Image (cartoon, rainbow, N blue to C red):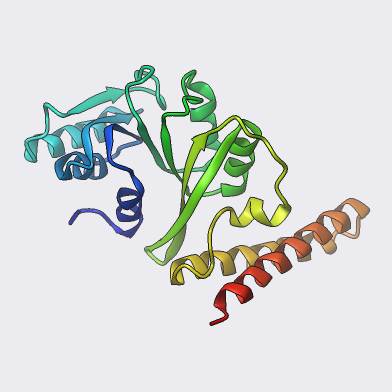
Length: 233
């Protein structure tokens, strides 16, 4: 745990005890090694598209005496990970659209036995859209601040249920602004972003821009209402 920054530490905390965890885009391998070393995961898969990060992960596993419990996979996304090989899958540090593409490209993604821990660096709303459209439920969402930037981590599972979601939920997700200061900061930033985009759209002077701006203003107000409700003693 000592090598994990607040973002990775939050993901670690959200991974349920499991038989095998897979970390996609493992980079240095700190997270997957921490999960296996602590026993939260009995074994692990460290996957990366590039040889250099995977070599770092190999050295990290060797230094901790975990080589026999951490399997290295060189490939794009979840290529090289078979059905039933992991019951917790982490995809972190990528754009939301990239994460959605990785899920869409893996034929076993809709296994209801998998817990997904997803941490988008950008376009979180696009990832939420994809998850909801494909029948995944975001069961919880927590936030952490690292290097002066606040991130959300989504826990998702495939349920097959599809239902419409309001505009504000696309941008806030399951984040509870009253949970802690990180969640409050995330909600406030989403509200400010929506107002800023709406202002730009209003300046275009087009009916389409005005209509979109109105929806975003309403979403920003809904987020502000949630912040106020959860801030009350």
